[in-house]
Image (cartoon, rainbow, N blue to C red; front, side, top):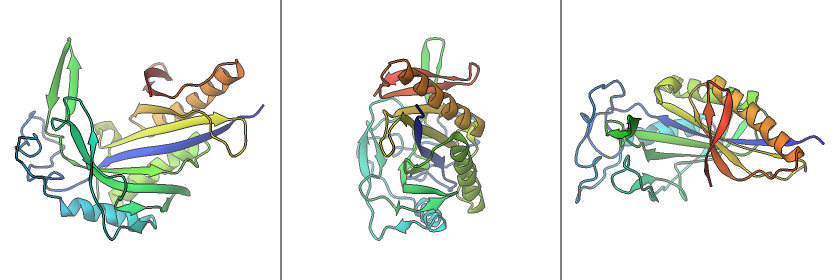
Length: 253
């Protein structure tokens, strides 16, 4: 029995601006000294107030225009609860109900939304210790979500490459995957019935276009074999192991 894959992508891209999303701290991805580009706002000190970065908004609206999306006349930001040391506020300032851009198409793939949020700090885990560098905390971050209309790994890879080219052409960001400036997550499911969706599995840690394509191809094959063997796919988050060329379980969603 043939199984029909359904794939949707979520792409985060750091935007090229002089300062961070809600404060005057420098947005410098090349800074190597930890916790240098920080201030009371991006460190979430009590009583501080965020002020929106107009250049970041401009970048996202230009991207929305380029993909033929609907630009918002009014927009709003929301609080996304996020209890982890890389977000000292305990929430991320993001968008959901009223994003800057709705709809559009890129590389033949329909786009659901494009919105703005703040990036998290960078965590490093080694030797039983965890260190947090807040230089990245608060950097303007664009999130683009596609419709679940992609059917194969090659189309997903082509879309991601085209988005990187668009960001660079517009001067909105460098989108270097190896530096974490562009981060791709794939939602993948397979179903035997036309017009229906299987159970969605999210794959993270995709830091190259080749990893995107290989992870999607592997996951389609894994889910198909699992179902054919009588198993039931569970909704979970999986990572990509580049050395083993396979996905691995991280947590149940």
